[in-house]
Image (cartoon, rainbow, N blue to C red; front, side, top):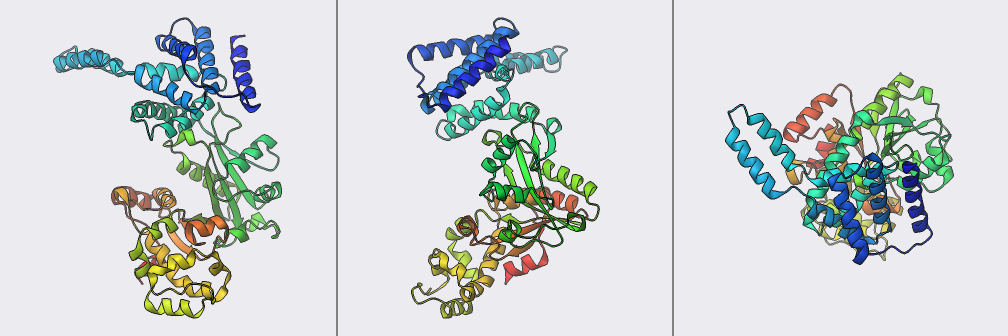
Length: 461
């Protein structure tokens, strides 16, 4: 009965919000009520039924709050329910005094208990709600926005991230294949969450779930209709070099039984609140095993991946243009410019030229730019940033999983997003079973980047 009350309460709040109920701030009587409920949750007064009811009332109150109110709510949890400094100091002193004696282990346990904050007790009680896990994931998404401007929230964020990492351990996740026959509500989630190549229509989605395609996702048992991360795969007989061709709804369906290559062309994390909880590498490994079982003729596993920060990096790195484009390249580009387009005096002027998207539709001009832009992209992929790791976030992910940079593809994504991110370039990362483990070891030990010889030559030229 209590569970039914909690479920109805949460549904009522979500219905009110969906119908335009005005979110409220946290002040006056509401502030007092919330603070009292938090103290009751922290102290664990009453039994399991009382704890659920309190957690349900707190969740209901939180969902009704406006943005400022939610920030205040989280700040109260972060600052008023941490470890007691005096108890920690006493427990630490007792532990130091007990080192080497029979009392050391009891003192260690007491110190560990003193370090535990009441925040964990509060957060854990939310987990008992029927939709509590999803509530906490969404709550952390809010927290990640506020923590950028409020350092007092960092301890709460670290605790919540640690707890979510335990709850979302890959051992608890379920791999499911999503098909056109999956529930419509789940298919709508794919459209909503696709983060790499926008799903433009239901026919576009149907094409991505056809017989020569596969889509796999990880699910948590407590969030059965919420994919945590999903990957889209094309079964083909070649290393794909153009995403528009790959996603062409009118292209003939390939016979999957003849496929020799699996192309991972989109990997989307769906839950902002799970940032820092990593399971993408496990997803790819599980999918590869599943595909090899169903299609024994598959011998190549590769991606067709974006270069999401290439343009931003290049515009901040003027020297990169001078290294990628020589004087002969500039003269060749000038010869193929349309009269109304600005002629570059040197490589430094090329970002202005490329800001005009017409260059990609001019076949001769695009060809004149090809070698220089490919060199620019190769240098970008081999450039390391903070911590000696690649500047490109997608490269960090795939190289960390043992792939190698195999090939750059010019004008492989001519969508507005592709031009905005990387001047239309994309890259293939190849997962070679014979070298994956060695690549992972070299990358994790010394940051060594596995790349095909052609990529390294292009970066040096």
